[in-house]
Length: 128
Length: 419
Image (cartoon, rainbow over all chains, first blue to last red; front, side, top):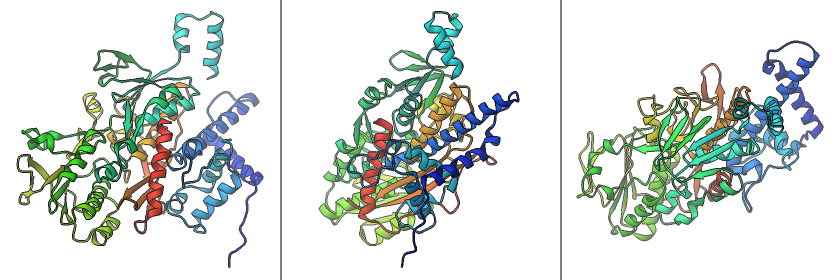
């Protein structure tokens, strides 16, 4: 018997990702003059660095799933571009936790933190 | 980039000093070598900069020929056309300038590359993806008459087809010998895949023949249990594996292989894979600091330890622990370098912790394949890439599904680097 599958809504996924970014911000903050303007700039820069890291990490998937997650026509390996973040996150977590079988993906998913999976999935979801 | 945008605005108004005009000109990146590393770096430098960076690819060939999957050509299952792709799209769609020439010298102080054709290319950043050079001098017999008939076919191209022709011309009941150098060498599982695909051909067309594998290493370098399994079942009695056989010479006239310890062996076809090192230009530029063979790099940026403006990729790199010299890995190196170069050009810090995967398929027959996968994460304490514990792994057995995935990998990565 199959247990009911947990679904993560896109809003929850995005919230978790934003929370992760907020946590990362102090570590990524650059030194500069203090004050509200510089703090705002620092937050934007940290967010930009975090999004860029997600882009870089997502780029790794291209070797099998195609550039920007756009799989070549008729590929037996599915594309990732433009797919719902929640679906991608659920699949990756299921691979990671052994609930979903496969060849390569269960082995690769175990190398990524949940936060990284959420950020990478968000990046692919944005590729329309 | 804000400053750059401001300067460009000023340029439009004709208000720039000559020095500012230079600063506002597009950055120039030269990429040497159009293989899995170099072509990927060229494409991603253009894509991620939205065309703002000038990229010149120095590559003598008009088309890319893939080393991965080339064993299917040697085994007679595919043709060269199946593993050959033109550089056209990289030029037309991504605006990469393709200079069909060979880089012969790098002047790191002047930041220039000299080409065989005589031209000199200036650069702000250099990407060096020279692949490997066969150390033919380690095998003196290769320079004797007939030495050109002893093929490595370890760079995809004319030798790939020529080795298939030697296999096709071999008598039934003959022996096809493959010699493997001590690791590290390009594509760790490649020689064992080749043994499978040569045996697959022989089983069908010349069933009394044998494949002899002489390996300088103490055991099969990669996917050992899986290769052993398929050799003992599908290719039973056909593939003979001999570890700790280091090839030191060959007599081309009699096709006799000489080892450092054991007695000589004769074969009908000798496929001799010599020891390798970083491509000649990297060695000439003084970048191959590890045993005078491989280039040490900062894995955060792939910048050479010897010259921070030169980013070295792929097989030429002194590998991190458990990092294979594979096409996938060169592709990942290319993206790390592209991202780091664009950050540096914008005056920003590079991604502090690269994270990427390696996936490598090997065919065990015309249709079945096996994989090895690993996840590599930058370790700030060790200052190198380390594999993530608990992640990665191998196939359980050869299977046709992964044979299809291997081709899917090829089409995806080719689109990623060239498309």
